[in-house]
Image 1 (tube, rainbow, N blue to C red):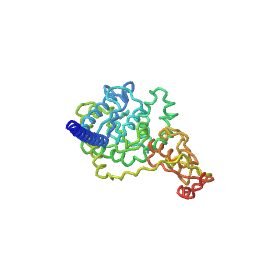
Image 2: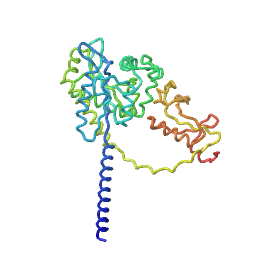
Image 3: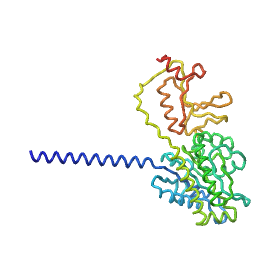
Length: 371
């Protein structure tokens, strides 16, 4: 009896210790998941030097600045930093986006340098959008031209032409839902460059950068200055200049995070939904998923829709609607909607058509006319 009692007490202790360990592990994992993730992307690298002038190389300056930004960010325990490259290697544009998306990042910051055949100077920060003028397009075209160094680039980017303004139009759909956040970060960066570093302010701009198109989170591309300018080139190539630029970008990210934290709305976790039956077909009804709407006519290439294929376009009024999938099975279209949202179309929703005319999905479901 005595031995049995001792064993019972040890079992209780073991269960208590195991429970305590599990609680600590869960808390630790939860905190790890809550970290604010920032992907830092040093433009160019390896066989792609980017812009170069005298002994100044864009790939080296961008990398030095990125590593300095990351060094400052990781001192904050709430932030995790992910790099697309940490040394002088060539990384494809698509791979940079994949790294950001796989890490489920909160921000993507790509760092570059500008160049011109004059003594142009100043910093500018871009978000993805239609180029408002030829100058913006030229900047994007130079940065996008790196795809020509990639193997099988025509297959990877499905005919995307960095030299074609029409190709760039399709990129703008990808970042529409992150535009406000991207603009906020871009404004923070430009403000710090102008007010703290006294750099010439070339403003926040929009243009069609492929590297921004690949990401599914608020994203900016920073042109830190002109290496072709005698004074600015020397400044960007110096340790002191790189430290100051890095500090300005770091503080802009922190300011963005503080703004985000102050405006964070905690939503209740949705109750688990019951498992759906295998099929729920409505005769004569076509369900589709609307993934985008735009006043621009976008080519139906998968690179314009985050890899989704067989996109359908319809003009309704002055706008073009873009639909993904087509089925009479309501449960199947819900799976299609989920797939679209996982690709980055967070606002994708289900629509219904009967004899080519759009009708209310709720009315279809209420009718109960399924087979």
